[in-house]
Length: 399
Image 1 (cartoon, rainbow, N blue to C red):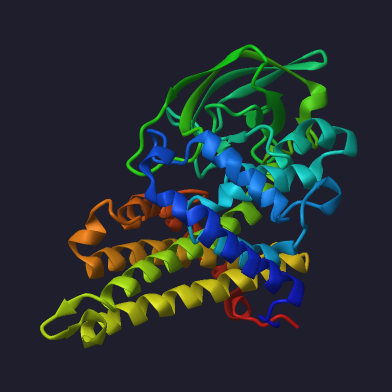
Image 2 (cartoon, rainbow, N blue to C red):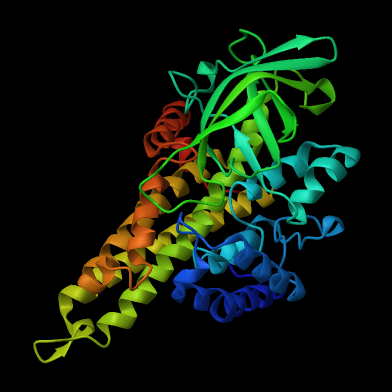
């Protein structure tokens, strides 16, 4: 496989990099731009999005006929990484979670008529969306078979009862993808649905406080007490809920890696800029051998993560599910983001630990990386099962 970028993608990458440097990063310095959850205010985001659209940098992952750039997964890997040089870059280009993953899966499975109703408003940035799967009280997390939120059929409708929690972006979202139990079949017992926030029979119980900064809409607990969903809003066939989640989470896990690599590189930038100027015992910190080891070790891990991510992206573009490749990338890049933030804080000393830089923001945010979209231990289990099944064939080259 060839890791060089096509010329059109390279030109876009440089445009994204320039936009982030000129339009996004300066906003980080003004605390009045932020809400109480340490994210950019909605009006600031709206203004950024107008500029991004005018620059032709909108919807990298979306088909051109719906207003996007359709750059493919390899192109996404290059552009998302640049977008996330600032934590607030992805939302400017409409490639931030959870909308990003929701747009990808809905584009793959909806009819043209359904896309006009449910997908296009998300693409246009007119509404936000959420993906409701995880449950409290012994319900599903990494094990979807534990889902207890039920969908009971009554004529042409489904009645939803149950609870969900840690639903990213739920507060203020308009369009939801919901996974619910429709039978006791161990493989075909889940079904996925769409619903609109204005439909009665559900509520946001609370916005759950977390240790790190939050995406817009937070991480919420939801209660369903008789939500009526027409069968026309069912996704795929009855019993295909797990299939919908797999379609969504495969690429979505990798887009996390793309963005985390951008954040890890930002940590390196902050650290490098400091150690090249900070004096210690007659020389700059950057000239100390121990500092060089620390920077070099992180640079090595970031580059490994980029190659792992790009390989998985290339496989997805070829029609491969790339399950093991995505799991390997997810484990490594999640660890690398935390390592990059921790190392940068150590090198910047008290300044890194303060709020004068974004390092402490990224450090708190990074802790979730080893949990979201499958804890690292789950992905290691996936790899173990694949290896035990394939043995020597686990390590193969594409032909």
